Each structure stands twice: as structure tokens, then as C-alpha cells.
Image (cartoon, rainbow, N blue to C red; front, side, top):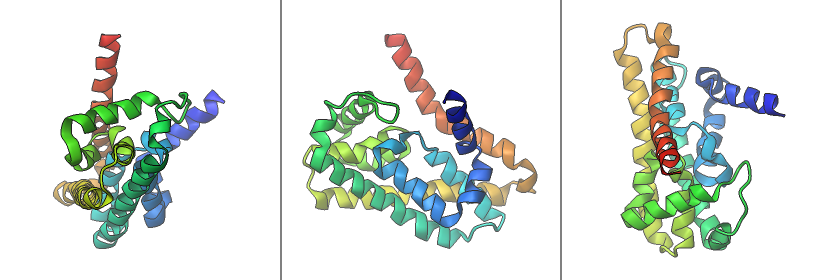
Length: 207
């Protein structure tokens, strides 16, 4: 079982292969799952979007079509998360931990929401783990959907466009980026994991 899980995560974080295999539809489903389904917290959202931008710079994807597909996927994902929270959000705090669910992630998102208020829906897009649970917390907290929708749309556009265009312009700026694709993506993955590593070290220190 552990070997199978290790193989799964190895494939999941082989971003060049994942992006090429997934294509437009697969990327949209991954973005939707990370933002809309509670089990999607482990998905490599930031680094995946930047990698997709890098591939767009090489001509593998059409940058405009990529943005047109992924931005709605992110917005719809958060909307689904909001309605999950509005319907069953409070009961999640009593749900036991499992491989795909940790109450601590939900509690961190709630602490983030309590600190930043409605703009959490925008800010959380750029924070791994928190972005998965923030819309759930907003729904459970009773934020009016009309207000949530405005922040959701703005946040979805800023996150997807920001990450994808970062990769796209990196790809256009670095000469022969095809030759350095793996080192560039490796650096991106490391940077995207820094907040998670910092959170883990902080939790370990407190413990």
C-alpha cells in the first residue's frame, strides 16, 4: 500500500509529465479539485499552473485558451467549496481525521479567515492548504454568497493568471527553456512548498 502511494505521489509531482498527460481538460479538473473538493489539498496547484505557463511558452498550449479554461475551473471550484461549507461546514469540525482530511487544515483556514475577513477568499488562493478550505469556512460562517462571489472571481483571476503568466514569461525570457525545463520546474516546486515547510517547522517547534 505504501509503495503504491509513493508511486502515485511520484507521478503526481512529475509536473512535466503530468501537464503533458493531463492536457487542457485534465489541468482544469486538477485546479477544480484543489479548490473545490476537500480531498484536493495535496494537489500541486501553484507549481502546476506555472508549469502549464512554461509549456505555453514553448507552444505546447495556447496561452489564451489555457487561461480561458483554468480561470473558470478555479472560480467554480471555490463556489463548490462554499456550498459544501454552507451545507455541512459546521459538522466537518466534528469529523475524525483520515488520510484525505485533517481538521487542523480546516482550523488553519478558519484562523486565516478570522484574521483577514472576506478578503481571505483572495489571499488564500496563494496559500497552499488554506486555499482548499477557505471557501468551506466562508460558507460555514454564513458569508453572503453575492459577496463571496465577487472575492471568488477576483481571486480566481489573480491566482490563475498570475501563476500561468509567470511561467509563460519565464519561458519567453529564458533562452532555450526546453533545455532547462526540469531545473526551472524544480525551483518552482521548491518555492511553492516553502509555505508548507515553514508551517510544518512552526508546528513542530510548538509541539
